[in-house]
Amino acid sequence: MSSKSWQWNNEKNVWEEVAGKVKVPPQQKPKPFTREEITMIITAFRGDRYYKPYADYVEFLFGTGCRTGEVIGLRWKHLSDDCSIAWIGESFVRGTRKATKTNRDRVIALTPRLQKMILERRPENFVADDFVFKTPNGKPIDDNNFRNRAWKSILTKLGIDYRKPYNTRHTLISHALDMGMNPVMVAQMTGHDVGTLYDNYAGSVNSRPRLPELHPV
Image (cartoon, rainbow, N blue to C red; front, side):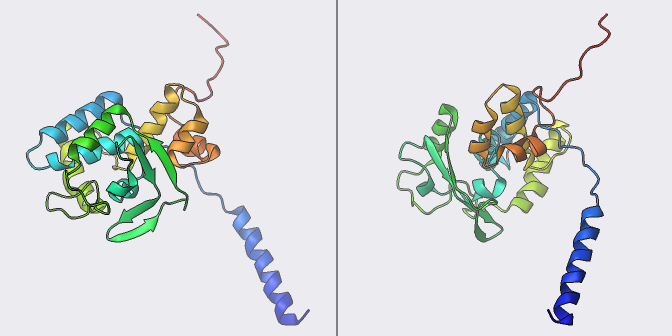
């Protein structure tokens, strides 16, 4: 082995040792929206003079737990003929089409309510490659613009503590687990592995470990 190769390997080992000693402090998990807050937010969007066109988009976020880019990137060709099934396999973020975050696709069965909502918004002569959710001007939704204008405005008007639109994903997962849904099924619907699901999203639900009562009254 040359001296240069030995030096490179030695430096690599040193950096690995240092990296192993770096500890990232824990961060508090985001607070999910309550079911009452979900209803308030969706109702407020539907009744707002300026932001009503985004109501279906918001309800789909809450109802599926999909990432914001996945919902923005949803196209009519990604839905079954009766709009009961959605294929989630790509994302659209600020003008760029990408694969999903995990580079894996999944299929989700929509609730009857979401199915009805999608069917009602589908144009009679729709173009398969068109986006399902668009701005009032027919453009792709810009997540940053939506968050800073529509989302913040509605939450402020309702007096609800601000959380990013991405929190709709954490909200669905938390409530699904809280209702006793199988974690494996939740992970399949949202595109996680089960370990990641619990580590990142299950910190606010009733299924978390509970301390034993040692001194009952």
